[in-house]
Image (cartoon, rainbow, N blue to C red; front, side, top):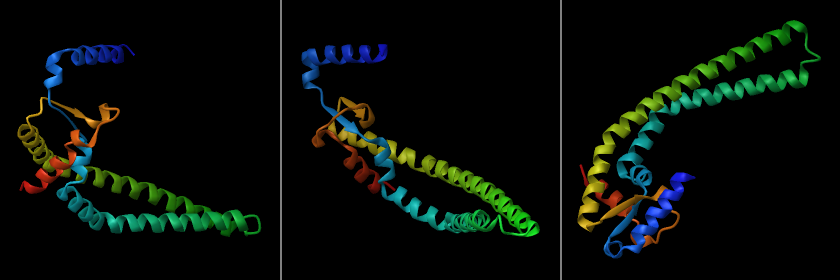
Length: 167
């Protein structure tokens, strides 16, 4: 709460000064600029191709486990003990396999995402810098810290377009 009060007071002080009236201000959605770039969209398609088979295996495991669980719930009381125990064991094995493969997939995807971010961040930073310089902005705020902004002050689309031009 104290930081909010300080921020409001600082904002009020800035607004009260004549110099603020001459400042050129813009807002940027940094995350959107990254994710909406052509490079990020291409990565998403490539990642889907790369991780798609693993995801399909997980879906199959999940549906197999659900089918076994449903059978146990519906017919478990009437099954012979050996059959019920076999199904319970099979269910537990599929659940363990699902957890293990899910964890592996999540870790592999996280590594790939970090690598993509490492490659794209310098390109994004350069695009942001160029758009700010070209527009002669004095102050650029992250959109997440702004309550409302008029479209003419949002430079996100310009940054995406500039990023797509960079090679």
